[in-house]
Length: 357
Image (tube, rainbow, N blue to C red):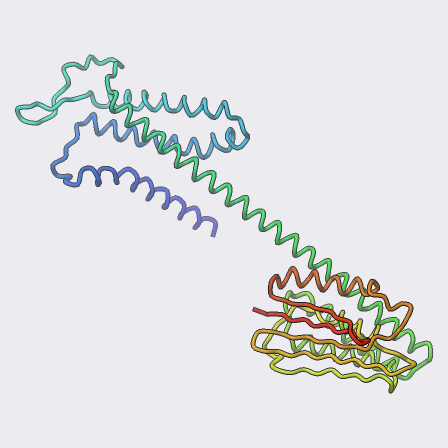
């Protein structure tokens, strides 16, 4: 894969250089058959192009990383000026060594040696120097802009990867907080059954084993089938029923298609936990009504429980589980969820709407 990427990069560079050097001649000399070039002009063109290519890679691979990026402004500007002077002098001298300057014979329109050329480094080509300078600055600008954009894109990609890694780490941490909080409450219930030597202790342990298996396997994934979450809540409710009396009215229902939608694991269970924790009374009547409904790509969760008066029934005591759910919703469903909690007429209502696409 990496070798293929290098090959594609090389091909792209070669194609770009061919287009860059041939385009001006195609634009300014549309009738190429009528255009002729002396040996010296051909040598000059080749030398200039070779040195432009060398300067481009010198600038992008050496000068920018080692000077510009490290904010060595003086040395970078100095290197560019020195490269320009080198480009204006050396390629022409090399071309002259290859082929001496020529002029057109007015009688037969053929190139003949220039009688004014004395074989020295003396040069009187202000127009050519101006054209070469513009071409040099163009290559310099294009190379610098491309390098800066590439570095910016690479920095942005690294920033996004770092941000995603941070979010994944935070999500993993939040999941690790959900599980101990859940087990803490559940083990307390089983402990209460064991104290009174209830026959429900063994089945309760089996239910807890099933719940643990689900948490250890399913919650390692970012998304799980909604059906699995519903079954998980069923198991949790069955585990809670062992401590309920006839004074508690409990309803859990589903409506719509729960077999095709997927959802982040353990989003609903903290609300279910709190409904049992703060909505169950051993002295008076109480009720819990939990409903999951689906509509197209949206999941609607509703939990309504009677608020049982207690010294420990304070909103801040619901902290760990509920706060984690809110944070996970922000990370996994930004702009695609709606959560409200209301307290009215001694009933506590949770409404959560999640758009899964």
